[in-house]
Image (cartoon, rainbow, N blue to C red; front, side):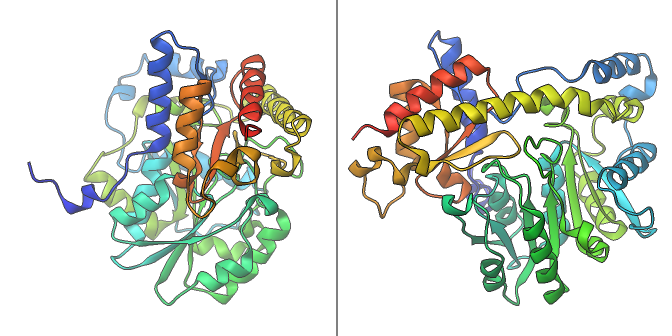
Length: 404
């Protein structure tokens, strides 16, 4: 059967493929350290599970919701956003709204569909989440990549973003806290970014904040629109329950945006998936967001401890120059190019895939090649697995990195 040129140009999600491969190898009885996962290996908070149980008794939990989600939940999410970001109550104009979708990935796909015409350029800050460029290309857009490096803890320079701007630039995606680097951009960076946006008044910002609740070093994440509230008028904020509530499989995400954008996204959604999961929406409507702090405190302590283990093992192995301080989300990026192991590779080529294969086949460790995040000769590792196997995996990795 002849497939469309559109689908032929899309790559599979490498993170999903690797996670599936790790599960398969584990089921075959092999000892695998899965450092590719982007989800917490725990259940959601008990209070949220109880809300789901309670909603099982109601007919509406099994029926269609409106395409954009239940109005009461949409209003609750705006109020929670205003409160959590410490915004004034009048920060949003009357035409602001929320659309709920089947996870943040679906939300981003709809947002880009509402914005992008063929040939429009969208700026991505590398390292970027693997699905961004594929979504942009699917809608006919052109990804424009702004690079960063380990010396700057993978934080892109504002001047480089400005240089990437062209008359065709329609939008920029800012992902802070960042997947895959595990850092969030500083308040100083956000202030510079807010100034940059004033120079380009037509630029739309998609602010992917899925990990905003998971930061384990102060200061906590801040955002450009907190500095200048007027910037909200051209910002689409993306969030989800997937990371914050350890509920990746329940597939509920949302966008907060001007009403015209939400209406456009709802048109796309109404003709593709219709409204998202009614049961989970109704459970979230009854859920008290104040439970999140107590639920996430041990999670953040655990990630901080694994980050400390990573630092210690790198320094003990003489690899301190390859380390930077991760501060948020679940991840850390290893730069292979500055390790003894890399001497057997040609420095002017990307060997991320080959190195990831070696780590899996020889050491039983799954990592995600950095080429899929826009940073060659690197890999993303996840910090969420239990402390003892994580330490064992890092010991294996540093030995591998030091082999000439």
